[in-house]
Image 1: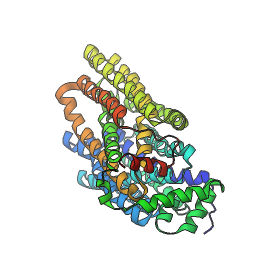
Image 2: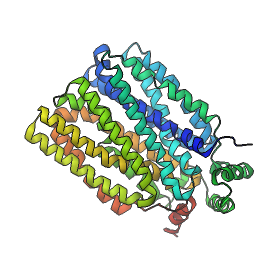
Image 3: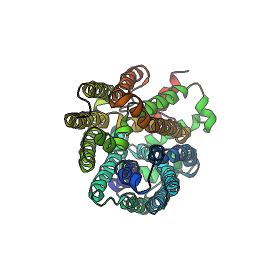
Image 4: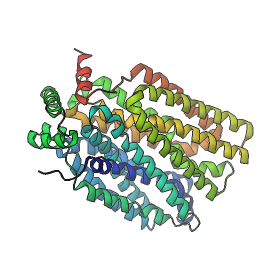
Length: 445
């Protein structure tokens, strides 16, 4: 096997699934303003169309994790790319609400798979010293995908062409499939399957021949200790990683991040902005996400995962609590609308530099090799299930308590996330995946 693709392209195409993840979750925020008019959606239907992708994502995450432990990372991503393409075309051509919901669930299968596979693939290919930065490319691609979705929404907003908004996801899906055909398999998965020479060749290409035998030795040692399978997730020494992964996944959603992404235009129109201004406001928020995620890529291997999570929680909690109290004072005025835009941008600033990239990086790091797919699946399912709960409850929450208290409730979860991180999260900066696993084992022995 001769590898003819550069490291840069390996990491680029390895992370490209994140762009589709971001586009398909972000595009609905603007499209729903026009879908609800064309298909005459009730408030329940509107929530179901938005949330259908999350149902598929839960299923995709649950299936893809164990599947990748058997089939390999590359094959599963190729399958996801095909599903992305099918889901995009099906959504764009949907003649009714039911068909649209069906294809949004199909898209969710691919989104859930990408959320599990992309950070895992990048983490297993990356050298230790820059693993956080390279794994964070997943989140960078996600926010670029979200920004691209916002821009496409803005372009098609005057004509209300929501079918084009949804259908254009086919293009990056096709690019992902073609690119993945040329990418190597994860050397850690290959070694787990006894294909040492292939693993050595890929590592020599990725590491330029430096430290390859030592890395192979550590992977072999970890493999010798593995039993593999779902049953290993129940073992006492794995539980700290499992609960940390679930906690990080749940808190990422319960501090309200995807509420901003899915319902930002709706929120802006509810507080006094017009439809075009509301969608343009989301473009600004998307731009902040991209800029701050680029900064996070540079910081994560220098500052560390835990300090970024704590500082991000503090910033997000404060911005949401202040936003809630400001809305209590000013109501749905134009001033409140622009204040919402400013404070949500501050919120996104802190999220994008912390919980956005760090959670997916840590989920790809904390589980042992033999059950990394299964562990990632549990974390991703917890993340998408929490996302579904937040997305479905946000419209009725908004109706029941108003936007002020909605922000305050999410702000309280931000405070709780600080406590969780301080008490439960162990730093992984500067340590190989095998060192993290050996440390996990040593805490119980």
